[in-house]
Length: 198
Ligand SMILES: [Mn+2]
Image (cartoon, rainbow, N blue to C red; front, side, top):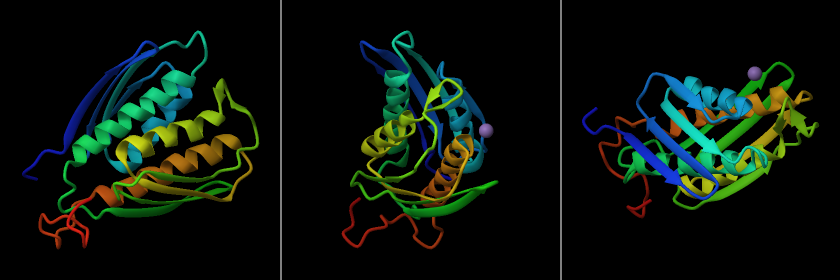
């Protein structure tokens, strides 16, 4: 690998302070300290199954709720992804995966198209998993999609248990991202678009 596909983004607002480092060509080394244990658990899925090295540190106004911190981790991760991908030379660009987790089965298809779009097809049966508000799953993906400029489709093919549904989503997302961000050896450093720009 000649060009290192690594980015660090630090983002500070009146509500949160987030720093994300990502190495797209990692081995699945993960440190995640967002103050939201369930989100840390999901970020570990992205790293482990995407084989990205991730270091995420966040401080936020958790005394209100997890909303701002959850969203701002998604925004900063999206920005780091966008930066690490650069001009997207030589990447596969599209990725998809169907991940089972016991009774749950989640399909993810994505495209680093430069056009943010989320089609969110999860139907999570409970309002909370532990302390985590399950509405925040969609908020997280909205933030990642908008700031990485990916097209992302998530479909729930099956599922009963909320923890399983969400975790299978992150596993499928990780594997789809891994596929899409891989360097295609046949593409030889060109941009994977008939328009020449992504
Ligand atoms: Mn779990």
